[in-house]
Image (cartoon, rainbow, N blue to C red; front, side, top):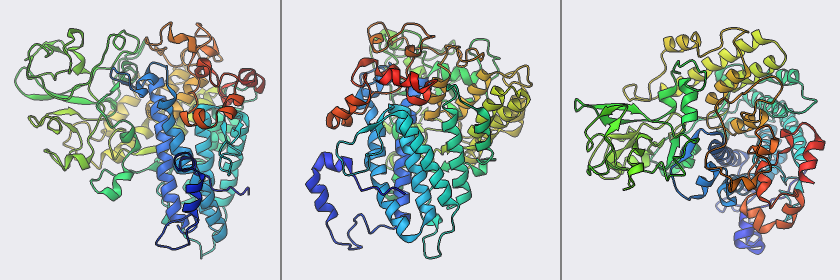
Length: 622
């Protein structure tokens, strides 16, 4: 296998090459960390923890494009992603977490594992290597790859095809190493594995699942064969127990704080809201939807406590921010933290009821009359136990409590959501996604009966997988109760779910996959594969119903794109511009990688797998 040399990009940039060399020159004293002392187990734990930050922070940025979540009004860098006008600074974190904190440590893991014959650790490192670089391809397109982990501080760029093929080959190497017998002198994989408990069987299922996911991403290509994806999926997870999940903890212990959910880290503020488009998916109130509410709704969107007309506290669900309205161009929604004590800024309505304007609604932190109602848009934020235990409130309750801010009330401002709590499970590649991949492939092959079976398996599997975590919570806490089995059965038998071959559509499959993968970068990949809501992929029709470019993407910002027609590839968001570190320190190679690399139009330039052929791809970048 190719030998990689250690390359620490952030240290080189921040401290200079000499400082990095001095650090690596220390002796192999076990009390002083260096590149040769840590065991393979210690290395893998840190690599896994940092990788999920890179991967899930990519997913969070994808959510601001796909329409799960939105920011409150403002000019913060991440707010520009919501507007489809991302700045380089807003997309640098995934790059930094991958190259600086994760990939730079892989060569030493490879060397350590090879020297000890720890083939399972080598396989894990190779899988993460492939997964990380494929994620970089997904979000940035062209990227340093073959020279990325060498001694070069200005590594050349590889095109998307080379990166894709390299990652697929690396996964094959990982599979081969997982199948090897390790010598008894090597550390068992269980000593360092945060994801799969040392089960090489689960790692193999993950590897085959990733290969299938990445092959499915090439569905636009003229040589795409869905049967090959199904063949790979036959070796992937076949139950919830076989999926790969990062199981985080919510702790006030400093040594465990790094194991709190990365979605919490990415969304740990009061400025993130659910969109109307996402809420409509769950309530099936999109155009021609069934109107049957999904039993996951109040688990995946937040609620808050309000006083009703009888002076009793009750929970009410958030409204969804409509990205296709003028709300954000008009300065909303605005943030709010505390209850109102000012009748002039309090809202006098909610759900059509006239309520006490002081006690029932929180102040929006603004005197703008148009924004007085923005407190109906509830934050998706949940508390971190390290905050709660140092503030008033119940230390076992990680919901967002008002007295965290003003000390005057213990009302719940937000229940948070299933995926945004500090101990939310990271469904890295879980069984429900496998089911939906199978459903899509069977549908493409015309085997609609099997497509229906896998589609319904996926819905049930996701609800049951959520229940595994929900069962850990106090069942008296609103928004954390398990989904009753009878509710799952009723929903699967309802008009919201396709029951037979005549009812199944690609839109129904992808609606349920979107919900099951709510904060995954894969949703952005899938939307690109189907050209969002253009409806021009095969005879599938409009797959993402009611989806469109946000209203904020106006004529002035449209200069970033090359088309005003939804049927044109260049109408839609296709990639993020390159990270600021590359623009600052590797500009010549960046410019050579894509003729639009420094142009405003780069956000609509398809990555390699998003093209029908190599010829199409190279016509964009050369």
